[in-house]
Length: 532
Image (cartoon, rainbow, N blue to C red):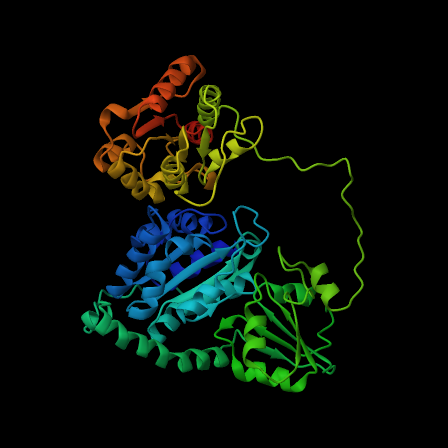
């Protein structure tokens, strides 16, 4: 055994390698990206031939991981919280089919929206699918939960959802590693056709099996070493805390807890431990990072009139991350502020990099659209979303991955002209291609700008699935090649770009513009690497 200083993400990745992983499948998304990158850069993973290429999106990642599990091998699937929305179809049905080789699905939630468009607590997804959930409170637990989680998955016969948050993923702590296990041998299930073909007659049987497995899931949770009961003398209040929130509670009690505490990091709820706490205490305070997941369940099934405090009654804030101070206030402790932010300090908004190709694209697009009253530009998820901010103020919407194309189509159907979509190359292959097919089928009068910087820039420059293939993909989907126009976004080509944009807006049908120039950050990294 060795001790390492790991990010939470790195602890997860190393644990998967040590547990006999055969493949990791993921699409980059903060705060989950470093898990896959760690495996990609691991000498041991390379020597073992562990699959670690990026997937086109989270849905394809999870389906591929399930295929590896079907063959009896251990697979890891990683995504940020909104990625599970993309993968939800496979996620829900993988709970019906069950697994063969161990399958752990990582959801990296982002409370306070450090790099996300919403706050989403994916414990609700795990509960919805009725599968076991793990939620580590520190980096060592993150390691141990993954190391043992594959075995738990295989023992129970179902995928396991492991939920971390940004603070856990991106903070460091000492982690003791364990002996490396051999990979599973390939072994497809003998009853595979009964389990993995979800025709209604077979799916109904599988759903009964899933329901019957619930008692076993609860028993595993009640016996789990990760769920701990800390007794204390003051029974007026009992505290339930989950995941990383346990640390914030512990910081407020450096000399030991004054009230009984139930730490929950494996779900379903360990009912026996919950009932013990409720029976011993007059009221309950629930401290959990994210939504009132435990709190709502307590109020739903206790039914004995005990007071339960948490996010729902304002005892802790309804939005954002917890902090030691917000927990202290909920405990009735005095909070002292030793530092304050001077009024002269302003937050600096993010901006597109100097030399970024998106800048030249937006300048040209804005110039042309000044000629059209009522023009609307529908944006998408990527670093080019910063075109919403000054000095560009170039987009009117940004909802989810791929929505630029489909929203532009809907607006055009309603009569908006011109309706323009701006999407990046990686986002296009992630979830824009199906929307483009809708546009092709109706020859929708919209102009789609696929701003191609040949990488997945926003998450650190990972490979983009469409590099060198964007025009071919569009032609293959059915866009008229005469209206697939390539451009090089540079100041010297400015007037030419404007002319192309103007011509395609005036075209009474579907147009795709592909301004292509490599990300300035990727170029810089390549130059530095070449000098070393």
